Length: 319
Image (cartoon, rainbow, N blue to C red):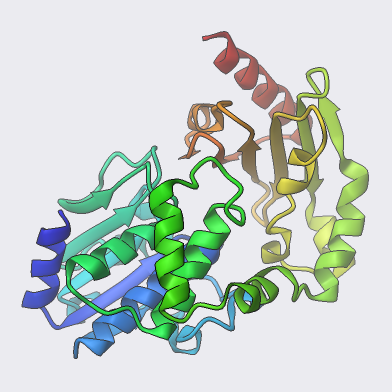
C-alpha cells in the first residue's frame, strides 16, 4: 500500500490533509510532517482541522498554516485522513471531505475497519507518525529538521514518552533516525509537557477531588464536568494527560477519564497496563482505539454511565 500511496502522490497536485477532533500530538505531528513533505515536492497542500491547535503544540513547524474553514472539496485531487478509524471522526465536515475524489486513510487504530479504498493501517505501529515516516522512506524523501520535529512529537506523545506497550524496536529506530535528522528530544518534551497554562493546573485542582477507585482498586477514574471547566477558565484541550494520573496509582490496571461535553454527552478516555484490553470495552459503546488506549462517547446520566462501564469491564474480563 505504501507504493500505491506513493504513486497517487506522484500523479496528483492538490491535497487536503485532516485528522480527528480533539487534536493530539500524533494527529498534528503527522499532518504537519506530511504537509511539509508534499510542499517540498512541489505539491499544493492544505491542512484543515475542525478544532484549534492546543497551545502546547503551537511550537510545531507549520502549525501556523493550519486552516479551520474547509475549502471547497472539489478543489482537491486527494484527501489524507490521518489518525482516524472512521471518517466521522474528522468532525462536522466529514460528509464534505468524503466527496474528495481520492481518499487516503493512514491510521494505526486496531478498531479501524477501513472506510476508503486506499488505506494504510497497521495496529502494530506506535503512531500514525511512524507510518508517515515509513511513507517518507518509501518515497526516498530525506527527512528535514521540520519533519523530524513533527514526527518525533507524534511518536513521543502516542507512546507516552516511550513508556507504553506500543513502543517497539521499529519505534525506537525511527525515533533515533528523527533525532539524527534534527529533532531535539529535550526541547520537544519541554514544549509538549512543561508549558502548561495556569488554567490547566487550576482545572486539575478542580478534578482531583473526583478521584474514584473501584473494583478493588483496579479501576481508577477522574471526572471533568462543564462546571469545573468554567470554574478554572479552562478548555477541553486542557484535560490532555489527565487520564494518565489514575494509571500511576499502585494497583490500578484501568484508568478512565469521564469528560462532560458541551452537548451533555460524556467522552470516556481509557488507559490500561499490560495486557488489559480497553479497546474491547470502548467498542462496547461504539468507540475504539488500542489495547492500552481507547475512547468512546456515551449519552446518559453519569452514575448510570459509570455502572454500565464497570459492567462492561467485568464482562470483558470474563471472556
